[in-house]
Amino acid sequence: MDDLVFPAGFLWGASTSAHQIEGGNIHSDWWAWEQAGRVAEKSGRACDSWNRWREDLDLAASLGLSVFRISVEWARIEPEPGHFDIDVLAHYAEVLRGIHERGMLSMVVLWHFTHPEWFSQGGAPWLRPDAATAFGRYARRVAEAMGEHVDLWATLNEANTCVEHAFVTGDWPPGRTGDYVTAYRSYRGLAAAHHAARGAIRDVLGPQTSVGLTHVMPWAHPAAGSWGSGLRRRLYHWEGAHAFLSLVGSDLDWLGVQYYYDAPMTLAGIDDDDGDPPRTDMGWRIYPQGLHGVLHEAWTRYRVPMIVTENGLADAADVQRGRFLLDHIAWTHRAIEEGVPVLGYLHWSLIDNFEWAHGFGPRFGLAEVDHDTFVRTPRPSAALYAQIARGNRVTPAMGAGLTYADGTSTLGPR
Ligand code: BGC
Image (cartoon, rainbow, N blue to C red; front, side):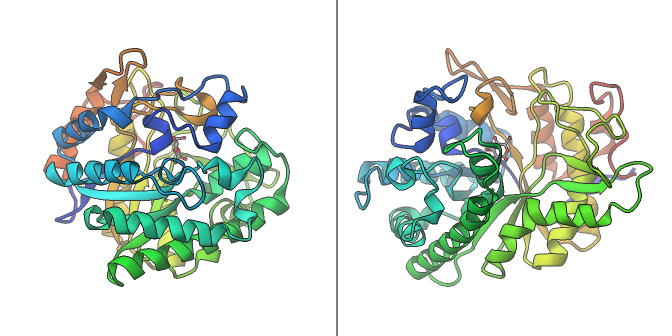
């Protein structure tokens, strides 16, 4: 294998989200959900990044990253309808300035799963008649307060994941199960909110402003020996990713593609045991070529530049992350070679954080966080990622000795 060299200016980064790292997000529906005892572990002070954000930025910069992704927290910024907290806005502007001062570009997500409590009121927030107007007003305020420090805007993160957990599986607020009608109607509300927010941002900052969104896409493929699963695969992709994205249409400057695992399909549905792959600490299948698949599919459908804005795994012992990084990045390189415009790769996540209903157990960080002392300690794989980012390439030597926990190491493209 030759070195896999990425195009000049390719973005290397890490992603985070407000509720998962900041701590004390008391005006949000997630906080209320946690206080009501609906999860085993509460977010509490999380990683205390509200206070320790400089440490996070120093860490990202020390890895040679060129882009850092945060989300800003609507519930903090607008704790009551129409009341915007100027200290909170100033805080985020300072964080964004800090990203620039450390030589990185900034990516800002406006909504990452949490809502102000006044907006959700324990119900289906995106069905409110004023949902798009309220979100557009919030986006406008954020653009006015910190727009000069933002390089890449994303309105919404994973509308699909949130809606599914909120209204289908019910393990996220408001905890409804099997309510597909509200799920789909929420997609319509979220798409309208995206349009309103993109319009507001461009109105404030000019039509050249780059506004996209980020979306997770699983990769369905035929399970070994299975036939006739094509329709099921298409349905799964539709339901999983495109039902929402098709409502957004071409109202995007870029698309953030997020990928974690595959879905092997038979005529009967997903065969989770297909092929006996290596798995993460959460039991998720590791299937790096799926990232190549979703990048191609998204490019074919949407024809906008893309950035891999999340990809990662729970791996507390850091025994698989190195191989995982190399393989997923190698498949991204393959897609670029084949003509798919992928502008960057951001790993999820910089630091261990609050993994929603799973609490602090799953460890997704390039750096470990001690949740008592909040000390951040980079894992060995962080050094590998830094080497990739600094050299803008993957070299054959990087893979020496790196395998998955089951001893395999052959999942990257040859
Ligand atoms: C979300 C993150 C989450 C990660 C790992 C993504 O779906 O955007 O908030 O922590 O996956 O589950």
